[in-house]
Length: 172
Image 1 (cartoon, rainbow, N blue to C red):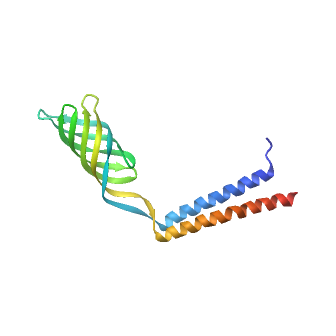
Image 2: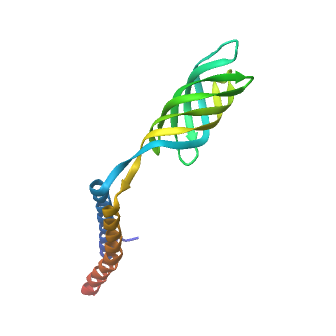
Image 3: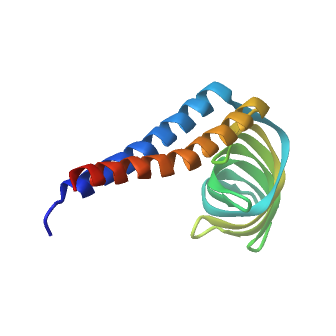
């Protein structure tokens, strides 16, 4: 397939228009965006991961460190220290830790599930709260600018198409 000059111009103009739109969105986020604070955000989901520094006394009291994944509305790494009771493989206790994903910050709450001492793994549920920050949000003025950017892109693309067509017509 031969590279046609018209095709190169068309691809260049279309790519430039898309890159210009992306750059405008990036500047919009910088100018009108802000990080959203999270205070006592409920977290109900599952935990799966490894346990380290595990100590179990004769009464079934357990302490250790959990390193794994929280999964529900978002999935992200979660690490922290836990304490509780172990009855066979069934664990119930409290977790204090750090989550890093859609929410970045501290978490605390109840963890219940299966704790395998030999494999050093935990799998179960988590019901707690998170305090920290989450993704960037666009304020009201930024929302209006975003609508304007989308409208400009929708109007601009046919104009770019017209320019491409005129370039093709001029050569014929």
